[in-house]
Image 1 (cartoon, helix red, strand yellow):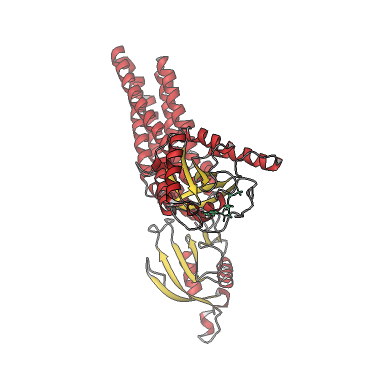
Image 2 (tube, rainbow, N blue to C red):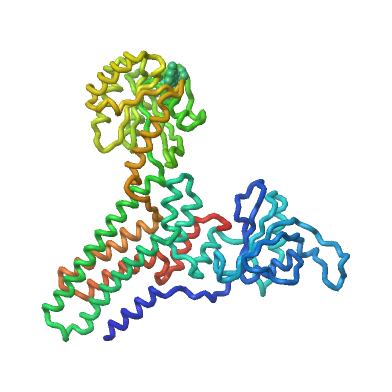
Length: 506
Ligand SMILES: Nc1nc2c(ncn2[C@@H]2O[C@H](COP(=O)(O)OP(=O)(O)OP(=O)(O)O)[C@@H](O)[C@H]2O)c(=O)[nH]1
């Protein structure tokens, strides 16, 4: 019975949330980007939020929950003592929109005040320093640390760690697909899933614990049955978590960017295509063959996907040492890419080149998504186009539909190319089948190292018929999930890692 009680204590510790009644100073920060803008929002959260409101506005009444009002705000030290009468001068700082959220119904769970100021640097600086001057030992006020607003939200049980990490990913999302993947964590879907896993593991631990505590009352077959039953469920869970990690890995490419390499002989139009895709003149275009001497990466947003395009030196036989090195790197890059785009210039299709043999080896590499593009279609006739299609589809054993003609100078075939690329992006990221998922690197590592490791420990001791140690293995798994969601003991150690990645004001 003793061990069962221990388990109950242990599980309730994991389900308990942290206490809200900690004494925290009031913190403030500029929550919008520090640059000249129409609006700059300063956020203030903590017990002195109301006091700051009354001091800045000179109002005698407290702000109302979720009511936005236009207020003049003043330098507090210039606010007159009421005994000095109405005519005393106040130093006006700005006229702004003030919004107040009453604890616990705010982002942080504490009182939260937002000042939507005019976004000039001088206004922001002056208001920030005025708030800072309101600090006193009994009512501490200080600048917020990176992520401190979200950290308070976590401490006040507004969110679990997977949700706050989702919020951070959302803030950093640059593309539509990154936004979608971050939303599932932020909305708490990840948290629900992890909690289901946690509950299942806890149930299994409870089953093992009854065997440990009441072992003498069960016959050996019953014990084996129960142990076997737990093992089946753990195996099921392990498979689920492994599959989840595979999906996360596929989705990760959305955050890192899908790697595309442009490969082709000199003067094929690689840089021209890159510029069209970038809708900007980022790569150097010149009629002198071999202009691109080295591979360079350009991050782009194509159809909502983050793409990293590597423009590479033209692949050809060369005596020039520098160019040879560039070609070597281009080949290496093509092996690392998710999608290789092979470009040939329509007017120079003398096909028996070093390039073509490389192109052939790439097209035959089934791990990759490869495309063949014939550029400069403006320079050839319709008949010539037909001939090229039949020669290349035969030479490369690919259907004619997978060969695209484009003209960078005439902007022809580009929409079709982008459509074709988008279908490949969906395939590479699996987003054609399901919504992408993103979890933090920290969560991924804990799933792989703690949770799955705990399962392997369980199996190791199951083989030895050691129920006590097998259940310890499952406990490590639960602890791992607790570390991810923030419900583990010693969570303060983890918080530093999580919130250091946030920006100030979030
Ligand atoms: N007529 C025609 N010319 C093009 C087209 N695309 C590119 N060019 C021209 O071809 C030349 C080479 O283009 P780039 O984009 O620099 O070719 P590249 O493959 O990057 O060349 P390297 O840097 O030598 O590897 C330039 O003069 C371009 O203006 C096209 O569709 N039609």
